[in-house]
Image: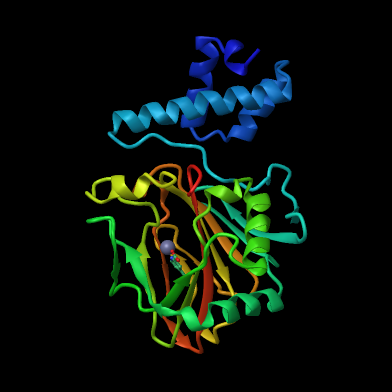
Length: 284
Ligand code: PD2
Ligand code: ZN
């Protein structure tokens, strides 16, 4: 029996009213438990009702509907997540936008191995051009970059398996890892990582794996000054500390996800990152 089979129209309305007045989902679940609901059924009922309600509101406002997204297992507020071969630290988590800061995703030696493997293949960064579906040099992104194939070498394959465990999303749904190198003064102006549905090239891009639904920006070195990852809508700035990674997800290609983000100018030293973009489906 699914939770929705327990949910009467009256209960549905009550959940929506309570949530709309600012009561959190955990408080709603606690209240339902107090009136005799089993915890797992209450959790599922609240999730189902609120998800359906948010989709309805989105439709009414002409926004795209939400899709499932990668999500780390943080329900019991763990200090560490077992990512298979490494205990990854949970340093910060934010609900809206969904942003989670991880520590110790990579050792300094693993960071260096990825920088070394990228080394001779770095070229001025291209971004996917949604106007045509091709790629272009972008004045908003003054870094050098390259892409690995998925699983191209052992360091990359190990990182990809770790990420898949960390955010509960198949390795196959990941794009190839991108490495970026910012010299002093280089930056990446604020943008969204999803493909703009209004652009004519987007349907071509989406044939391969659907939309991007999450990003992991992994810091491979310690820039002396600057180079933080910024989220202007929050506002939030994440320090680019070696081995750490900032994860954010977006369940629809829309600014309501509040995932506008940028790479602040590096003011002293240089910055190396690896970016992992996760798609809805297998990226073949
Ligand atoms: O280098 C960064 O901090 C950064 C910021 C925004 C990287 C990206 N976006 C990206 O690779 O998409
Ligand atoms: Zn980005």
